[in-house]
Image (cartoon, rainbow, N blue to C red; front, side, top):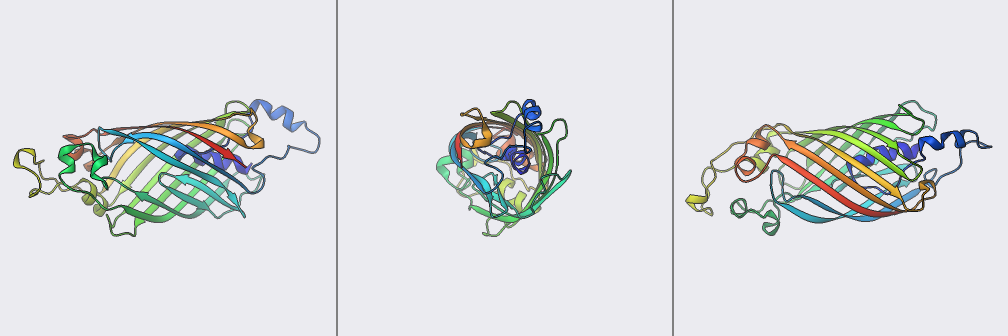
Length: 294
């Protein structure tokens, strides 16, 4: 059942696989010699590409198209799970018949908010200058419960914690999430993820503070000064759908993936003039992708 746990985590990112459907369980259970083998039983890798449509920076009401690489799999007993602009590794093996599975391992991600003036799309915000790209390294920890409502679903709770090591915001983030994953047919699966994020003062100051005086900004365009502090940054929901084009996900092959998400910025992430005056605290995300599992 390792592929159930892996795909349960995929509600946080793009993936290219899904498990057997619940309605097929009777056939599997009655099959001679036990459940059939699948491409997910040993080492496997899912690769592909997607196109996402999301806010040009945190708090923006302008949206850009972005090309998103897809990488996910399990190699030598180490699970590789996607994160936004990053990856998380699970170093803890799962038992096939376990009622509770645990995950833990390192993770990294790149944060590229306002690093390129051409992508900011707001002339006033762009006048406040480009920011540096953050390289965030930390750990991912989780627990999952398989077979909650049917033989092939799962409920998982996960926490990511990262620190910037590139000298950009020099802060930390903590991102808890809860994901319910279930197959809809033998070829189609879905997951629903509820998530939130917390930031420290350094992170908040770098992305959300507005200096009271800026020589590069004309007086008539100057935003009110604002000193941001850490705390809860956002909460949101994501819906993930995957469909195997062969009609049987257990043999790998080509899949199509769709994701839709919404999040709301809160506290100083919403109150900063970058959001409250020039942007919007409601943030949306949609993505379509294709992937191949082998």
